[in-house]
Amino acid sequence: MVAGLLKNILVVFLSVLLLEGCIAKAENEITDRVKVALTQSNYHMLSRQFTERVSLSINHENFLYSKTQATFVMREFFRQYPPVNFQYLHQGIMKSGRHYTLGTYKSYGKNYSLAMLLVPHQKDFLIEKLIFVETF
Image 1 (cartoon, helix red, strand yellow):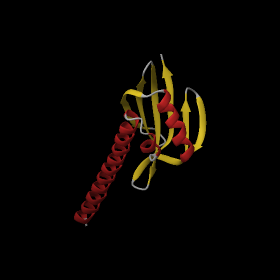
Image 2: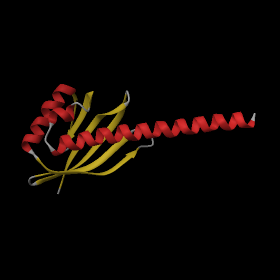
Image 3: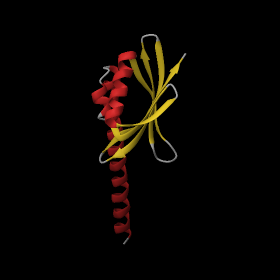
């Protein structure tokens, strides 16, 4: 009986480790895709990472867009502020269990702090909210 209990505990423990590994891998995959999109001004690649309705905030102007509308907004953002550099500063999980990522986006003459709120979607994550705030 004790051996059976230990076996069940081991199975649960290994399952949790495997699940956490899959979640971490999915989060790393989306952040890698987003980094490529941001460094290459690739608004199509970026928009593929959006939920069907995505909140975009650029310098405190917050709007909820469809995925298609957000694609055009990001196209204009990249035209006005082409990237010079992008890097992640921090990734974490809020108390609510939601994943987020913080970074810096640098363009010619403009620097932005970036925050990204991710939501699980199937075996991946998608961007639910993307925030750019100009820093001085």
